[in-house]
Length: 279
Image (cartoon, rainbow, N blue to C red; front, top):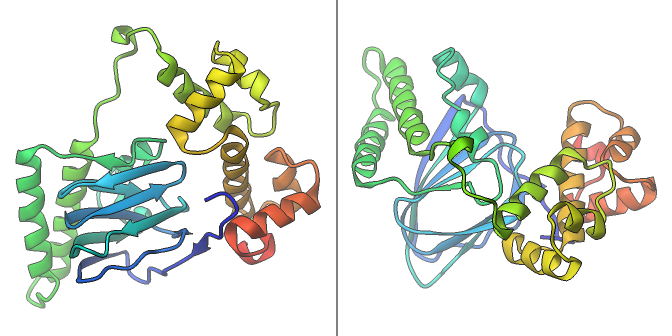
């Protein structure tokens, strides 16, 4: 998305909202982001989602987890009907529903390059189908305890999704890092040092790769050049800091932008809005 606009879309006036959508033609969405977490469950059709620096071609019953503020885009094949279930969620509400259960941990654990898509096994798919059917039926229920029933089903859905997140590998059992693992490590390093020296030479040295090999692998893994990836990460972090109340000039400096005018232009190019409008 380097150079394109990404706009905030959608407002959530309820704690959560469930959509079951069927399009005969589908539509392409430009890059955008939300203030809430988003779960997409593909039921049929062909769609490729770009989330931050990763792209995912979804298959039926794949789950896509998009954390709030993550920039994403759906490229939909208009030749096939596109059916999906989408959940918009205020994570704070889910945490209040079941304190200590960490129901939104799935969004945090999946919010890394290459980890946004989940592919449940067949038993999990059947459980998901049952929960979704019950949630759709409960949407029009106005009987006793209807709200409590809907909340209980939301908890079941989030538990099912969290159980589909792969366990973290045991460091003691990890195999020696290959080139792909080194790039993943560099992505983490970039996120932790956005205000530091992130030159290609520095990063290639940390990955123990030649500059040429490093740049080639980096583009293969992320779909972006090193410069474009770092620029995007810095802009996203700056936007997050500005939303938190940090002055735009300070946020720019904290994220590695030495020239505010260059930062301002890049910010408008990326988000389609000025730092003041994002605030």
